[in-house]
Image 1 (tube, rainbow over the protein chains, first blue to last red):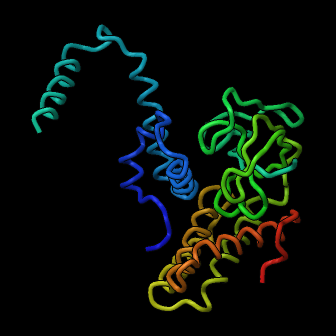
Image 2: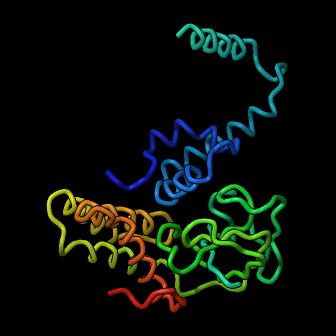
Length: 81
Length: 174
């Protein structure tokens, strides 16, 4: 395909760069062109923004011990991959 | 200069989520204009088709530059008035026009895209679904001819400008 565009999968891979404004202008344009017609990726982006907003307000004391242990287990597992 | 801006319901910018002030009041960017990152973004008529959402507004831009084809970016802008001709009915007309424009000449893969566009056009509204039909139809055009995607987008934009009574760089669509 000769049309320059992002797929949904590619968009998911670079969403952090978009949210942190670390994406080159040409790629930002492709990113937003994809969002213009893809409501699934719009929802995904909204979920990411909401997650960042909510987790940005959490302190360690806000977590239950079970939630804290669960998160640590996920992180340890991820680091071992 | 005057340009056009698609917004979500309630004058909300589709990507930043910024709510534009009421018509006549300036919206000013906190940072220098930069494509898709900072500044007030708006469209020339030839760039309309890619960005359709629920509301279309005429805007005045101050100090605008064209940073991508059909995309103007300025330090500040203000709404002048809503383009009432853009609504669910004209969005459905737009979607049908997009589907029909590629249907007659499509074969093979292009015909599959064209059929998808025609099916989606029947229920298209001014929000995401009309935008999706235009996108699928442009892919049908690309499947027929390399470079067809961009050419079809230009045709779609000219159709919109003509149907909505907006001034365009080019004449009415053929």
